[in-house]
Image 1 (tube, helix red, strand yellow):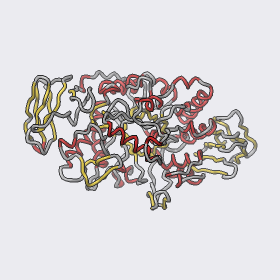
Image 2 (spheres, rainbow, N blue to C red):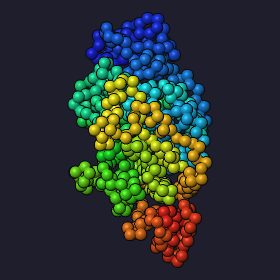
Image 3 (spheres, helix red, strand yellow):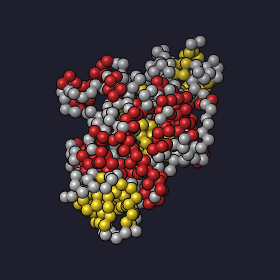
Image 4 (cartoon, rainbow, N blue to C red):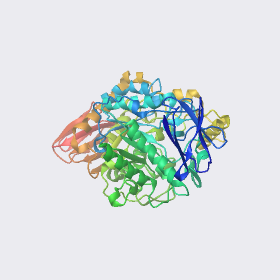
Amino acid sequence: MTHFRVWAPYAERVRVVFERGNEDLRAAVGGCFVGDVDPIKPGVDYKLALDEGEPLPDPRSAFQPQGVDGPSRVVDHAAFAWTETRRPELDLAHAILYELHIGTFSPAGTFDGAIERLDALVALGVDTVEVMPVAEFSGSRGWGYDGVFLYAPQSNYGGPDGFKRFVNACHEKGLCVVLDVVYNHLGPSGNHLPAFGPYFTDRYKTPWGGAFNLDGPDSDAVRDFICDNALMWFRDYHVDGLRLDAVHAIVDTSARPILEELADRTLALSNELGRPLVLIAESDLNDPRIIHPRSAGGFGIHAQWTDDFHHALHAVLTDERQGYYSDFGGFEPLATAFADAYVYSGQHSNYRRRVHGRPPGNLPSASFVVFSQNHDQVGNRAHGERTSALLNAGLLEVAAALVLTSPFVPLLFQGEEWGASSPFLYFTDHSDEALGRAVREGRAREFGSPDFRSSDVPDPQARDTFERSKLDWTERDQPEHARLLDWYKTLIRLRRSRPELAAVGKARARLRWDDTQRWLVVERDGLRIACNLGNETVEVPLESKNAEVLATSSDQSSIAAGSLMVAPESVVIYGLG
């Protein structure tokens, strides 16, 4: 027997349709239809029919084994045999995150394939994997941000049990799991929610499609749909945190915004389960209210991705100035990012042509996640170039050092630790030809081509675009890649061994630099990270006559009285005596 509860406020009749027949649900309060259907048990497929319409998949389907238009399958979450004997707890102040995409992380492109690579992450020294969205999307390949069944892990990745095996394996190896979820829109193919009720509104728009109805008539059930989904990942899949995609695109004018409600309900579940549950927002608003605690009038989200840090670092290392990089460049924005996380906290932005952001105040440094690359910053380039395609080996080592010794929570993107040569391109697999063509043409226009035929932008719909984006794990044994990998391991060990490198308290980082000689020094308590971005050996003044070299990416480094010699495009990390 399976209990059904379906929100369909405009329907007069709702039936559960399955192979052996169909059964009516009874009308209940709030536009819901409920009922216990005896013939349907875990493993049985079904659809829902509204009035006399064609049967559709369940909006809260736990499994779509035949894709977005196929039947839903009943899942008994309690039947999975969890064996996580050493379940870790996510502590952002001491965490190092590793973002991965299930489809391209391993040759198999599945949850089980990813499990086979977890030992490499343990050896690297990270403690948390951040998984790009896995909610069922159209086709067999995609980034995951076009999901349409928020409760159903992608079927060709391995479905519900596959994702549970992945989380279970991570926990057994001491790795926490953060899952990327999308609550600002649904994908353009396979979205059946509008047939059931007013899930979306035409009063607001997002860059990717219709906006959820979070503050209009009948929005209570929509808010429950989202909050219940978040709690499901924590409760039924044992994830430790959620990364909330593009919350700046969530429009909600209600007195209690959905982010605040989600934070409150997450805290309540955390107290019930007796373990920390973490929320990390992606936002380009530079609005600290999102991550201010509830006691200070904020929404209570624990942390946010910090694009300003990335932009400032990327602009310094690459000298790129197009698009939003036009607001950055030089060492001064980078110094601001190290001190305050936000570079723009109320200043005028030339790129945005308006004042942007507000001061973060005394937020702890664990409130900010920083990176030199991520899926967006790589994949939203026309050709998906990683930083390894833009910088030489020395500057890659500089980038790694500045992220992994920053006062914030560091995040790595899959393969960056060995300078992976594979791009991370934008790829899709829409079966609708018109939609596929629109995606191709839109991608071409985004990068300045009038149509796809005159563009050199890789075809998002082509299988080869996806295959080229898969990691080549054999590269790790090649000398140049192995050297970078060893450097990442050295930096992570150093961050673990030195308490002053943890993201504890307010950020206390200061930069000294020389624009002409292209060197900078990050000062963190008694530690210094000296970076030479130029192609000549430079002499960096010390603040003490006594200094001890703790780590160096170069074979050359020497300390004289009051100064340090740093080889070209290298890093020396030292402590003051």
